[in-house]
View 1 (tube, rainbow, N blue to C red):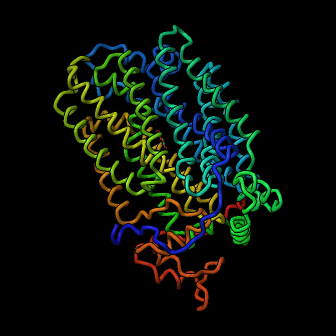
View 2: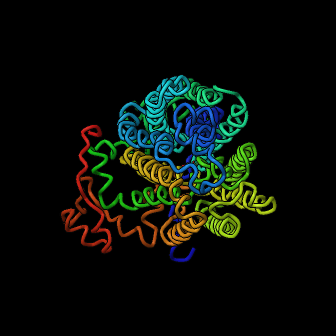
View 3: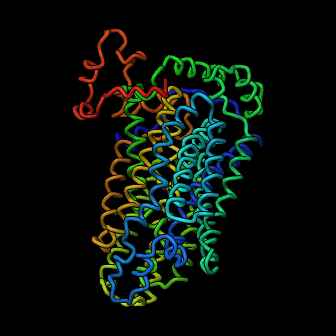
Length: 541
Ligand code: BGC
């Protein structure tokens, strides 16, 4: 890409010797089960909230509305803040928990943080499946949210750090693969449990116990990453693990690089404050933008509410879950595509190709709905040919998301922050992701009610904006060792390199003794508006 691409050039850098050892592959598979849980809860909620017994028990008002005759406005049937709060409480809890998880990933390690996540999950699942009232249901969901916060903090970091550079993208995407398997599994479970009278929803919520137990066992069995061990001063253990996972004795260069990264990391007393320093701004801006953009594709409008959406579109109860299973399967398969190509084609191509695909799919959906679904249409009004086109377009959209913004939203932040700010950076990543997931989850049913088909035009506008962002501001990170990103990516990028002047850890620029205030004068004008507040979290000290 001329100018805008900032492709990693031949600017040197090391190729560390590393075999693809069974221990790496098995550790990654186990750790990635953290994604199963996240996905299961993304997928299970939509189906459960459209089950009559569930609605009767916890949301009788909506149940009555649903039973009302077909005169009601189809776009507005499920617009209920309580129902939306059930969905989004998970994300509010998760985004708060991630700041605590930042501390544990840094101080106690990636592995221990995954274990904490597993325990939260198990307690949360029990409360949810046994829920007697709304309070118990929400309490369980909050605990699950804490679990997701801890898991999404630790798992992507674990995968990016333990993987050999040349397959880092693919191994990291195992996390997202598990997210999609979780969603599919949940859709399948719902398809059957909806037929069980009375307690089907309990089974749906309770089966999350399987991924919860898998993650807990996985966390007990895996080794921690050498980066984390070395960062916590366990040099010998770190070296031993490095030798084991790389399958060779020639690990000295990589070991020294990790020791150096950890020396630098130790100088940092306040990772969150450090994150706001000028030289960390490119990673921070990109991590935040990626999360906002990932959610503004509108993916979760489809994932959470696919069953509700399909009913709203007149597909009927059974067909709706069936369609959700189809989108779930497309989601899994397309993520596998991403695993294969991400380290060959690179991150940018995937994001750009998907942008085109998502844009057109959304426009076509909007046009069909705009023409065919009126506010008070009968349930079968869409017509089967149009209904098929809508499902195909939804699948087109989901597949594009699944090989681009889905996995890369988690991969890129986990591989671009330097060790010194990696935990803090990941926690901001998770926090912003959940915040926007929350906003979309909370707003979607109301937006559908008011914007109607226009909601898909709204999301397509965002897809356009994010694609332009990628063209100009997203550097390529494939095949760059994780502790060499600064030299080989940021310092080479046409725009971001201006943030990379040699700066001391306390924020002043080397040589001229300039202060932070002075040094930010040298940036482009808009960076002055990014606050430089000192977020002096005592936890991160
Ligand atoms: C996103 C989730 C989304 C899922 C869909 C993930 O990467 O973070 O919000 O539900 O992909 O597969």
